[in-house]
Amino acid sequence: MTDAPRALERFSLRDRVALVTGGSRGIGRAIAAAFADAGATVAINARHADACESAAREITAAGGRAFAAPGHVGDDDACRAVVNAVMHDAGRVDVLVNNAGTNPQFGPLLDADEGAIQKIWEVNVLGPLRMTRACADSWMREHGGSVVNMASVAGIKPEALTGAYNASKAALISITRTLARELGPNGIRVNAIAPGLVDTKLAALLVETPEIHEHIVGQTALGRHATPDEIAGAALYLASDAASFVTGAVLVVDAGWTI
Image (cartoon, rainbow, N blue to C red; front, side):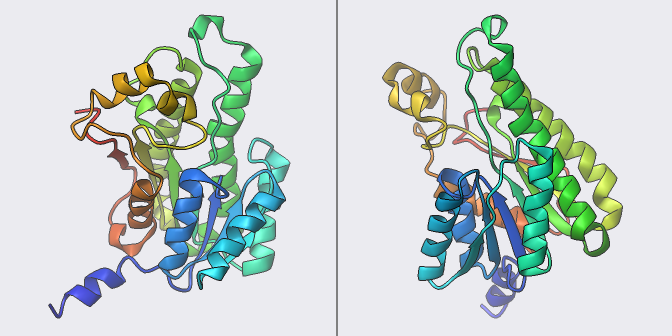
């Protein structure tokens, strides 16, 4: 029993600052709450300031530390501004969770509107790349850090009708592995989580359409979809010292869908 506190301490984020994009709802909000519970000061990013402030107030009311850092990760200037604001307000950024994502395309890939594809690419691929660059330039290159990218099993085992989203998540997995190689010498770990179906606003169509939902969960070992809280634990592990020897990994959290 004497080793248990030391083991649990490795999951602590005490005295660290974490920036969570897409942190006002769904998986991002669950991650922000989990990080705050683990001792981090959490900067909550999303497009709308009121949503960020609401999530931050909820964490603060529960005894944690959080503040709003609104901005659109699909815009390069906004990415820089968000990280600059976090540095101004908190003085550092030790953990970056690139969770913000979008998927306005559903249907055959060859019929997809190119504007929708471009929007997916800007948010799901260029957003994480830009945010990581800004955090590296502002703090992590000199001090180390952890980057957690929210990929998807769609980037590993793509299905029909979400082709642009699938491609963006496959690209994010590749970016994760490349950046792990490039930033490792700076003490920056870069990992990804690949969730299966999670009950969020982004996945509402898949969860709420019976035939689609049954098709997906019917392929899982556990026979169900996840809640956002079930993804937050994986993010806490990868962000913390418990994963100090882990970089370039893609942690699949999918109820056994890909096995």
